[in-house]
Image: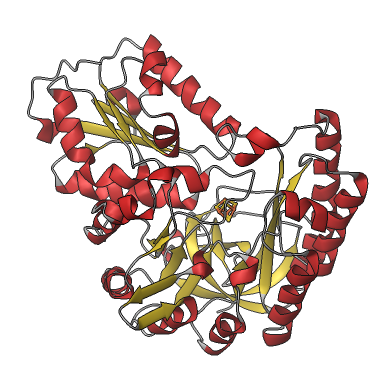
Length: 469
Ligand code: SF4
């Protein structure tokens, strides 16, 4: 869309909407800092914006449908402004999106976000930009030669984001090629960032008051950086980052089972500020389905990883993810997944119904042959099993004292909690180091601080607590 702006682009108001995973939230935060640094203003109200950026997700069809609906609404809007589609869907669809939405000014894949300010400037001059990474088949070298790998993270504005928490990317892309997943095609090959650059970023964030750092990677524990004869693995990285002054909690997501060596488990046990929390999706409990998914482990290997984790850290909290109704999944496979949840004692699991994603190996080679009704039933059943296991897990905390990082007033209330008229005693939300959402009454001034709380009650999703003086 041609923009009717006559003011300098430095006064432009930008609205950013973010869909999808933590990686996208981090990208949006980095883009926000970059645009603020370039003189743009970030606004919370789309109606006042000169630029509408939507940072997209391609993992599920539902997420893409949301983008189509937002663009459809934009097409019908009277307001003429610059529109940019960013992220995984921009990378996946490329200029194909322009056929359906010719008014879109910017198509920008995740690897090109560092140049977004310039793309907006060009859009203000009426120029359309399509900027995506090379096709995956062009190989790793094309991506490594791409100077953008580190630059968005490197120029980070540490003032942007929540007061106490920050995400830090340690690697990009994925080389695992699970048959259902689009990520290796839209985020490219697995490339680890230099440990020095990561250390420097964490140090700056800690200096800016961020005491909880979450390291991000599609398979974060596969991190491996080599330079000459020097190789740094994930446990080395944890050890180094745990020494950054001011880092009180160090987390990481998401992990891949076969890359979880004992060295990482020992580092988690021995480094006091590394949270004893593991999110390591099994996706299925059945060997046959794991093989069809191209997950590179067996059920026995996954079980043995869980056993090692509990043996080394009896108090570790583990979360999983599952896909139900994967092509050819039978009742016996579904039962195996339910059994895996019970055996692994997951705190929680994200459970999704399979849907074929265009561009994946699964969409090309596997027949989506489990009826929707069966998927829906299995989804409900697995959620019910997980809820039972979660309730037991959460209730085991009742009577214990925990440390919470207070995030702010609670936006959720799955169980009513008395809130007095005193504005200093709001229902607040905090998180344990094991990632348990906890609500308690307290003053809003606690946001961003650590408190000790005693757990008084629990549901399958939430702990309820009172502050310990
Ligand atoms: S490990 Fe599998 S599911 Fe995870 S990002 Fe890579 S391909 Fe996708």
